[in-house]
Image (cartoon, rainbow over all chains, first blue to last red; front, side, top):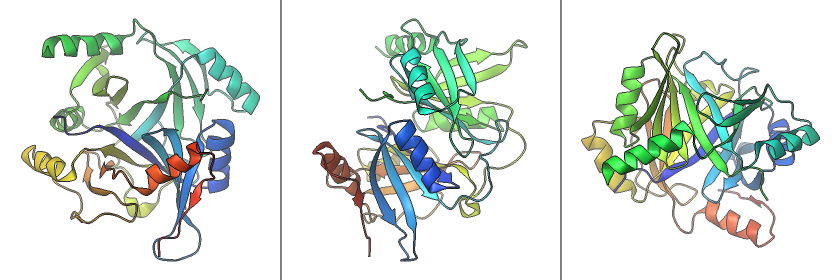
Length: 148
Length: 156
């Protein structure tokens, strides 16, 4: 049996919870699931759960120190990627929602379509439409063939 | 239709590619694909989490550790991987030579779930979680689907 089932959530430390909620809920369309108060009883929110899928969540923890997430060369989590069915439709949605693309749509070396946005703290988010002939799916087919 | 089909990958900028690859191979995410740069050096190494979720390792991280949890740095805070059985997962981690980053509390957390924490070689925090069928996350989701409002819970 595999050690891990899958990635359960990604947690962000955010500078301004209201701004982050506006971005992820109102603009990106994730649903707010619940919020928890601080376990020690001090005032304020400890974390808010947003639903990506039934078993993938985004956790927002307020109280982030510093104005921006680490830059792209720092040793750190570098970016997250959200999968989409149709990147053109997603880009049209972003335009309507007022979310600028930080990198325009392009076909990447892996043969998938991608475009990039940033959240209010500067966390980089890749929007990706996986194509049937991409390198990742080829690699997975190879792994499965070798294991069979 | 929701905008997103789910998380596609998580990308890490790493200081020591060999150490990071050995770690992620050891915890069950095998290398699946490697892209080379114009000098023939690794640009991105992909490890498979599931058929549609990958981990990307980018070498060349600037010589600086990941901010500590207590620093409360703005940015990505931690990742969570789910397991079917927390006890079995702990035994497998121990066998793979992966130490827990803090002593495990074997009781259920305030959310109803069991888990533990490890660090990757760069200090990225990874939570390991056995989701209970009656955990507060699943209850909140069920209510949302039934048309309810987000839950606001008091834990005291």
